[in-house]
Length: 400
Image (cartoon, rainbow, N blue to C red; front, side):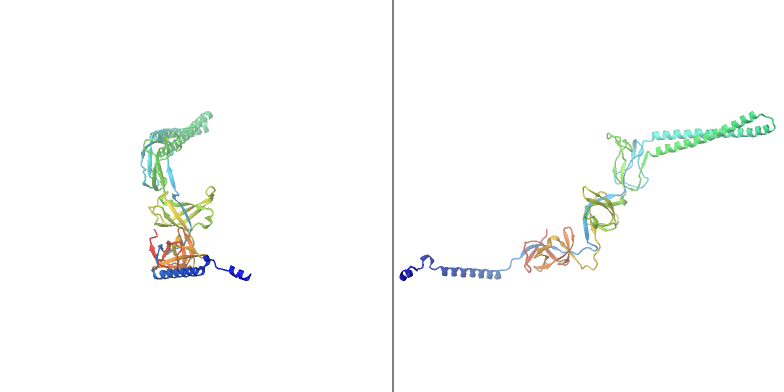
């Protein structure tokens, strides 16, 4: 029975040589890994291509707290119109013309106004011409009154004759007063006629520049719209270039960071490299419920002829400088990476990457202040492989 069990114990042909084969596979894998390690050490390391940008020094002064965009607008802009309805005889205004207060911009047809003035002057002359005759008659009547009064005391004339003489003197005195009032009334009508004549001349209400010519010779103009498109309501539009300012809409969630007198850096869209100093003039005390914004007006510290009305402008509201703050650099936001739960930057120096912890400061749009991590002038990595290694070789490529 035992011999039968021993006879049943045998090694199948398919299992023979299994252990030696496994050992051979392990030895081959180890040899291949060692060979790869030797090749990695022996072969030169391939340098990574990275895009870099120079860290720059921050501008002198405080950092921006808030950015906004708006337009250059004048506080004084006027579409000058005539006070009366009339036909334009001459227009002296043209776009770009510099005018002073009181300069003539246009003249209207003044024929009727001149006729009315002449008639009023004639009425005054007629009334004035009556005065000398009335003064003579009044003087004569007063002399007769004195004579009749003396004769009446001597009972030479009757009381009735004295009353008639007194009535005549008072009548002339009243007529003389009426003539003088008629002269004053005529003078008033003359003043009205002269004003009507003056209204035919359209003058500049303040000094500025003509930015729009709205009427031509021969057209009818009126201070009110007559409808139909045949009557103009304005002669020209004038802008006071000394009253130019910036008007921006600030999101109401950020309006607490804006105050009157706050320093502002403005940049015109037409001159993106020109940084214009300005300051907040006023915050309009009302909000736009549709846009959830508050209007802010900003005054330029100094005006320049290149600043024109309705130009687009971007502004940065500046904060107070931080006392005792260390010198900072400004880098593109793309230079800051988050690794192992912290912010880092990679600096390319002498063909090697240096990984440095970064302490971030105030954002500046597409850039950010760097309190620690890089110095002005150093090349920081802004693009390249997703994974970088401290001390790895790298070749700088253009950031563009």
